[in-house]
Structures are given as C-alpha cells and as structure tokens.
Image (cartoon, rainbow, N blue to C red; front, side):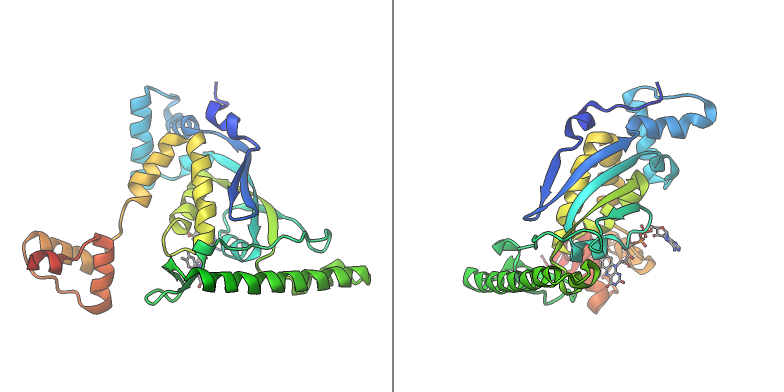
Length: 282
Ligand SMILES: Cc1cc2nc3c(=O)[nH]c(=O)nc-3n(C[C@H](O)[C@H](O)[C@H](O)COP(=O)(O)OP(=O)(O)OC[C@H]3O[C@@H](n4cnc5c(N)ncnc54)[C@H](O)[C@@H]3O)c2cc1C
C-alpha cells in the first residue's frame, strides 16, 4: 500500500512538545515516511521498498549525494506557539506554508516569554550575535527577570486600556513586545525541514530557536527515523572545509605546519575540534 501510516507518529499526533516557558510544537498531520522516500526514489523503475537494510542504504545514498527530491515527498504540518522574536527568525525560511494568528482579528493573550535563569547570559566575547554559555550570577538574572515582568505587565495593561477605549485591535497591538507569544501552522517538507534544522540546531543560532528545532527533530524522528539518522550522519555531523582548509588538512596528515593564521586558523580549529599546533607541540 502506498499510503504511509507510522505507528510511532500516530501516537504523538496532537501531543504538545513543550518548548520554552509557554510555547510548544504539536504535530498536526504528516504525509509519508521513510517508506515514501524509498517509493519515490524507486518509482522510475516501478519497485517499492525492499529490505530494511537496502532501504536504509538507499536513503543514506540519496542524502549523501544531495539527491534531495525524494525527501520533499514527506510533509509535516506543525502547530507552533512561539515568541515573536523567534518567529521573526523562523519566517526567514521561505520554503514552507504558514498561517499565523491575526492580532488585527484576535485579542492577543497576556503571554510573554520569560527566560529561565540559566538562559540569561552576558554578550558573547567572540560571537557578536550570541551569548556566553555560562549564565550570569543568579542575583543579576533575577534583576533581568524583574525588569521584563514589570514591562510586560505595564505594556499589557496599556494594551487592554486601548482595547477598552475601543481603539482598533490592529493599532492597540503595535506596542506589544517581541517576547509576546504568537501561534502558527507551519507546513514543510522533509528536505526543507532538514535545511531549517541544519541552520537552527547549529550553536550559532539563537538558543531559543534551537529549542524549537530540537523539538521538531524529535518529532521528525518518529516519522522517518532512518532519514533523520542519515541527516545526523551526512548533514549535521559533517563539516564543510574550504579549499585552503583542505590544503591545511592534507598538510597536517603529511606532517607539515599549517599555513593558516589568525581568524582563518581559529575557524579551522573550530571545525577540526582540536588545535593541531598544540597537538604537535606535545
Ligand atoms: C545563525 C543565523 C544567523 C542569521 N543572521 C541573520 C541576520 O543577521 N540578518 C538576516 O537578515 N538574516 C539572518 N539569517 C537568516 C538567513 O540569512 C536566511 O535567510 C535563513 O537562514 C533562511 O535560509 P534560506 O534562505 O536558505 O531558507 P529558505 O528560505 O527556506 O530557502 C531554502 C532554499 O531555497 C532557495 N530559495 C528560497 N527562496 C529563494 C529565492 N527567492 N530566490 C532564490 N532562492 C531561493 C535557496 O536555495 C534557499 O537556500 C540568519 C540565519 C542563521 C541560521
């Protein structure tokens, strides 16, 4: 039968995977599975799935060699509740279909993102877009939360006041902050989901969107575990080296000194996961 029903996916349909303090990801529906990827890839010669081992080999072959179109045959619809600042980053992924709650039509709920104490950190010294891994001292984190909560309350009271004066919802909402929660239905195929996940699971992505990406990968694993394992292996776990870096890598293997310097060397070390100069000094 071509229609794919995945027992593990059926169990989690409609279940909310909690993210942040008030957000969630919920799988509304899915179409296809690992089996669909294989069916689509083999359609050219009219043969469906074979053995598990051969299907797994095929899925890995496809992903390793960028034969991506069979992965587009698997589709997910998620219902996501997320702060607007996360939504701003998320919406940049254009290869998806979205329906978002309308602040012109509905009264926005009194729901703002309040970070955990452990997520409050100083500006990163080496990443202009990021924060340090270590949280700030507890006392300072409490002060940050107090400021956020104070402003949320004041702003929401003003919003309600404007609504109470019958000011249009589309105007009353313009003062609401980026921390306000919004909701949307987000439909995407597996190829584009992997693209999203590669970018948004990366340590360079903002921590909050990473939590959402992590929840979505957990859900996707239920539907197409083999493809997700192939993603771990060939996409997420792989590293892209530039031509100069490849030259340096070959040099290391031949026992030569690495010609890269400064920032280029730092990036190379980051990708390798060790510092070859320190290794050779041992
Ligand atoms: C860590 C991080 C930091 C970022 N920082 C910034 C920032 O500071 N400022 C900022 O503006 N953005 C930033 N972005 C967003 C980033 O530039 C991309 O817009 C976002 O990651 C979506 O990627 P995408 O376009 O590949 O995805 P999608 O929109 O899902 O597109 C997928 C692929 O489809 C193709 N595609 C889609 N639409 C078109 C099109 N119209 N024309 C041609 N090809 C198309 C492209 O090949 C694209 O890679 C950041 C992203 C990350 C992950």
